[in-house]
Length: 195
Length: 363
Image (cartoon, rainbow over all chains, first blue to last red; front, side, top):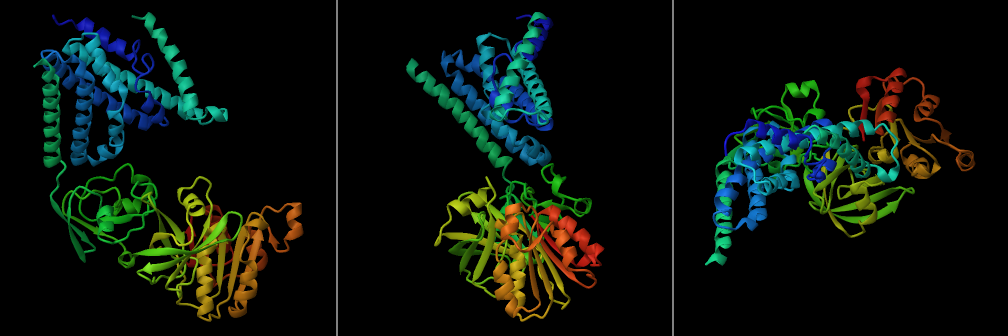
């Protein structure tokens, strides 16, 4: 496939705005609701997601196209992808525990959560469904990570403000968060007109 | 043969990932044998990788740690002499500038990755773990109970009146700190006064699950809040809520010592329901401890309360002011909610007490 910068650019921006992982596909909702109480933690979680998304996509793409496809066992993709993600997260955790205790305590709590973040598995599967090339997949992974981070940081900002408003008791916590996520998703639909 | 392909592919990939993990574990997570040196006196050889607190507990040196190593209680402070990297964000909220300067760290957050030297207060070497048995549970008010534990192994504790022990919540791996309410002369007994905290992990357990005969573990003694015995100067005690526990220990101890010290013991509660031990102190204890004046007071009194309450009313500071005047050369022991301690100590200083002689235990 000839190198097409415009194509990468479109995939990258689409995955941030028009096809945002959280707000369009509602993937990775669990940490999106659970870790979005404060901006710094949300940002830390977002950084960890970008990093793991990018790296696991880099591993999963060749594994799929060079191992699963030649052996005609594409249906193993779910198992293989999740195993790669889990192993990768483990190794990264051991690595930063050794070399950066500060990063370990700020990121360390989020890494185990990421293993079960379905947005991570989601992008690997999407790249297969959409038949992306390696470069397209990487642009897609990076964009999705940034889009996810942007959404969770925005949500954390709103929730910090929300502490000062009177929310009916039954809606406090995850309830109101889901409603806000819905409104944010509708707002993001506005981006669809751009591209 | 095609049906075997997925088996081989999957096993192959699992194998490679497994090998990668093993290698990472071997070369990255293995820190080898490290020497952990404590106060230049004791040294342990440990397999690196875990937190200092874990190794100390494993070697039966008990550091106060109420949260079980989650960096939420801030009790497990110690100086780490070896350079083990910068202060972590989890530790920062618990450190004042002096502590940052002299390398005080939370021992539950610092991992041993090389030979490490630490300095902890000497008295932690005296702290033991006591296998104990619940002997009785006595309700004191609607939300406060007295728990009496018999120590079985070791069967004797040595502490100063006012210090606290930690109660290990079975199955939770966490501890909670409670002041000892019994006299240090009862070596075999530890009594705790516990007030129910709605939703609290430990108090829920103690109030709903714990029954007579249960085996539990206590560690202690801890704390620098204790009776100073180098003087015979008069004492003011101020307590609120379950804060009467250490004061009770102090009063019992002085009674058994036949002390002639003058003691004004103020106990504040919201309503008459919160007040306990009044007759006990005023009639029984005061008979032997002649210098004791026990003054309970309630702060939120309604019309009905006034019918069944004949004692003092108002904020504890107002009550102190009504009962005492010049406090030069007095000593104070206070335990209760932070606001109560803050305003009481301000008042005591105003009434002439030396700030250095006000001791308090906040909760």
